[in-house]
Image (tube, rainbow, N blue to C red; front, side):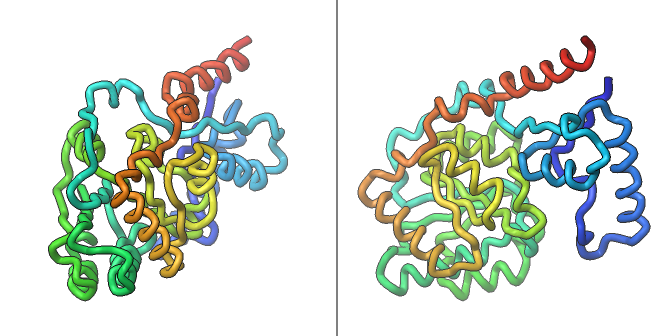
Length: 280
């Protein structure tokens, strides 16, 4: 049997800016062939599952199913625990930045506004970006940092091995997720599951969609806010800072019992169940 697994969409409608028409046309043909030939089609979110099923109504609805992204418990067994919060509220992001949907500049502006209104002391805030890539070193990002008075608060670190990155994330007070665009609302990056398993509060700058739903389902794992909502982001940062000053931010975490179904052994069991159905 053939199980076609979609962790991300094969193509987007409308196509991403700069996509050659022939590439978009070819991707549509290849996806249709794959979906038609597969015995089962697995998607990484309910939203992507529904999108694929709606795109191919001639296929039986039972062909499509969802197996979520998740985390590997073994990656977290030997991580150091943060015995106390940091001397400054430390927010860490792991992964590439870009101007399209992983843009930290709204965060910089909201921090500045919260500080100007007396809600946050910027001397007690640290932002760290691991493996931010070219956009992290771009002039537009550097200018935003300077304009918002965050030069001493923001630091960029080069890419590092996965386990070393997890160790750095484990030492944060709060973890930052940046994924805000219309074509990502139906996706949940594996990074978010790892953030939640690290037992850290998550600040997710996302549009309403799959990532926001996951945070709501896991009860208490953090905040979701659209980065275009400057006032809302300011208010969330103010609330997080208030909890940090009260030594209570670390209590905002997703219960482990709510996360166990995202462990990859459990998810592999779901995939095994599909193969068992197909070979019987």
